[in-house]
Length: 120
Image 1 (tube, rainbow, N blue to C red):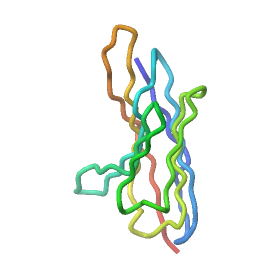
Image 2: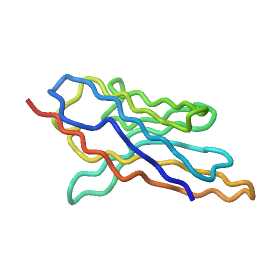
Image 3: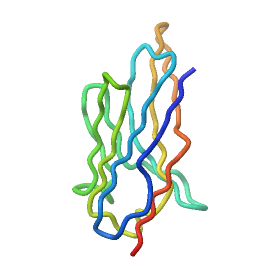
Image 4: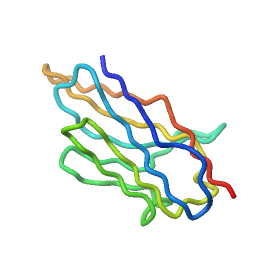
């Protein structure tokens, strides 16, 4: 089993910054793609950013130039640096990790979600 623990959410003023972290623990042979999604009430979960094991990054258009995703494989951790935050970034953010086990199967895991509130 794999557990994901997220941290870093909270309240910030418009234009401010937050850094989200997500650490994976448990039985892990290799971490594949890691990322962040977000979901507003009554809406589908949407991609924010992903980063592959090779370091290739993908961002939603709405966050390009403002958010930066990174990972520390030694710590099994993915980060999301969020700058120039806007009120419309106020949603719950979910960490996503694809874990490859020794026998080759890839399993997807989600964090518990962390609330980000952008308000003055």
